[in-house]
Length: 89
Figure (tube, rainbow, N blue to C red):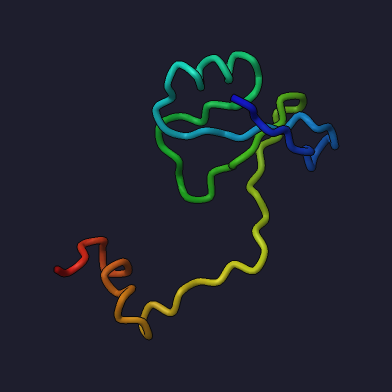
């Protein structure tokens, strides 16, 4: 499995890797030991970092551009999502 390396915003080195949340399988344990990913634990909290530098250990979130949120009140098809995931049948 190939893992991408990212440029660290703190030290500038291309040693940033993805932080993987959830229960890892054997492949992810091996990748973490090789320094290809960082295991972030079983629970990802809102706002948790998504990448970490393996050189300086700086962790950061990805800056997303043009994030458009749906109009919850104006769209009947999305109200089930806003109100709690139980889609009416």
